[in-house]
Length: 226
Image (cartoon, rainbow, N blue to C red):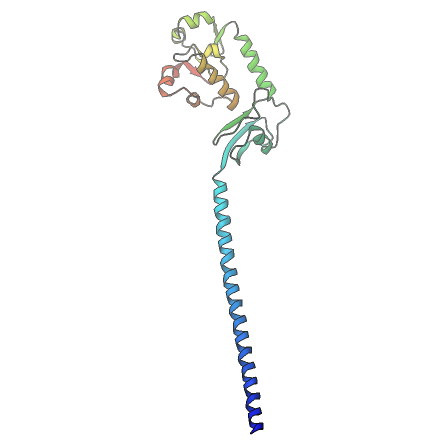
C-alpha cells in the first residue's frame, strides 16, 4: 500500500510539472505574440505622425523668385519668415559687381515675391538719369520739358506731345505728371522698382500698393517700359 501510494505521488508530481511546463510555454508564446502585435502597431503610428509633421511643416514654406546679380538665379523654397540675405545665400551668393546699397538684406520675404539684385552699372546708370532729371523732366527718355510746365498742366502737356513716361527710369517728380499720381504713390513706384526690379510690362505697375485698374486706365497710354 505504501509503495502504491508513492507511485501515485510520483505520477502526480510528474503530471504537475508537465502542466506547469505547458502553461509557461503558452504564456511565453502569448506574451511574444502580444509584443509582436504592439510593435507592429507602433511603427505605423510613428509613420503617421511623421507624415503629419512633414505636411504641417510644408504649410509653412514660401516660394521666392530671385534674379539679377546672384550666382544662381532661381525659384527658391524657403522657410516662412526668411530674410532677403537668406535668399541671396541660397542662390549662391552675390556676383562680382553686385550693388546692394539700395537692397534691404534684413527685409522679410513674402510668398510669391520676386527679388532683383542690381549691378553697380545699373545703379550708376539710374543715378545718372536721376541727376539729369533734377533740373528737367524727361519724357520717354528723349524729350525734355521743364518740371514747372509739366506740373502746371497736370499731365495735359503729355497728352498733347504724345510722348510717354518710362516707369522704369522716371523719378518721383516725373511720375507725378501722370493723372492720379501724387508724391506718395510716386514714391511707392520708385521703391517697388528698386526692390523688385524693372517692370516687365506696363500692367505690372498695378502691383504697386494704391494703383488699381481705374487709376491705371487714366494714364496707360502715357507710359512705357523701354
